[in-house]
Image 1 (cartoon, rainbow, N blue to C red):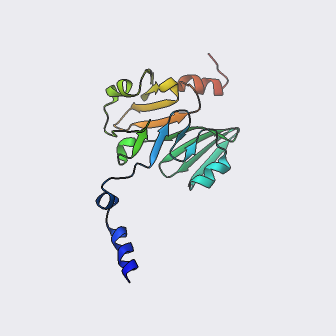
Image 2: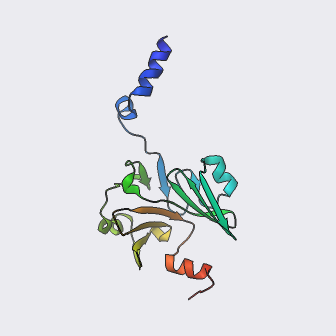
Image 3: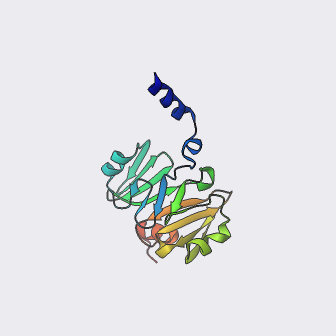
Length: 167
């Protein structure tokens, strides 16, 4: 009976009250991983690490959703993983071992994660930082997207090259 009460106590009490801190479960490592999703993983490896709830593909490209994660694959390898809006999440993301303030002002991104290059597009902009494998998307509305990629890219260049219109 004592074990059941202890389990119940830990089930009902928030982690913060029991251990004094909230766990930060999502580690962003530029060019390497976002949470459990590793750049370069196969679709099968992604499915073994997270519960994929949505999936689509066209030609060489695949797209998956798993909880807060959005995953882009080409030739069955993860090349991008992102979270659509870190502002809507608990402060539980870290970059380089430092917790990310999810309420960060966009203007502060280059000083915290730079050097960064800004790319302005129709409907929003990106900061491409840390050798350009760490990206922050922002623009219309208040959302702030966090994206980890396989290598340097600019949205415009990647889209054009994949459509066969290399500039």
